[in-house]
Length: 280
Image (cartoon, rainbow, N blue to C red; front, side, top):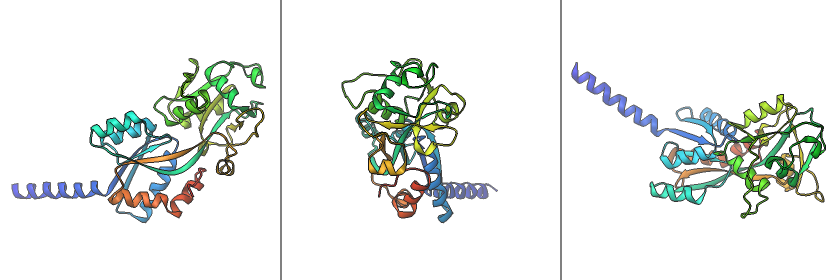
């Protein structure tokens, strides 16, 4: 009886270890969590013996998980910070960056809002609180409700640096104290759908008929453009960014197999199908 228990335990351990070796944990950016899930589902259809788990939580969460060794791939809608690289190396982790697509960052309002276009300067003034009523931006006499992603979000960081601070490293502009910090891009989409005074931002893959994506221009003398795949590819839409994944060193084994799929023609077709822009 004892021997059978020992053998069963050893078999369980061995099979458990083998299973763990054929699985991938992905964490990070909410912007591309749906894209990653689509990649994972398609990959597992073709590789039924492999398992890929995908969770969101924000770019900062994904990178922190990579540093702590609790995920194999970190999704990020921003580049890794120098202090994160230093911390990773202290813990024996070597972050390896791979660009997997491009994204236009949509600024959205409720469809009932008559405003349909803004400049980057107007956006900065709205999200920092300098413009607090829609009538001062071409809309109705309503107090603006500002929606932002939380601070661990790569989308939050990008929007602050590119729009609020206008790419000026000396700027210290911050979101208005009244801004509501939302836990996900979907939460912003849901709030904008039901609130005619709200304004928010998220990756253009989240745009639906329940929100209106604004046309954006760098300044009053520039062309206004909508967040579409064509406009991101051509550079007409001014708020666009690369999307990344990070691994511990160059990908190997199953992680490499999955990354190769992401960068393949089939993988990049899924990027297009989910309303992002392929890298090729």
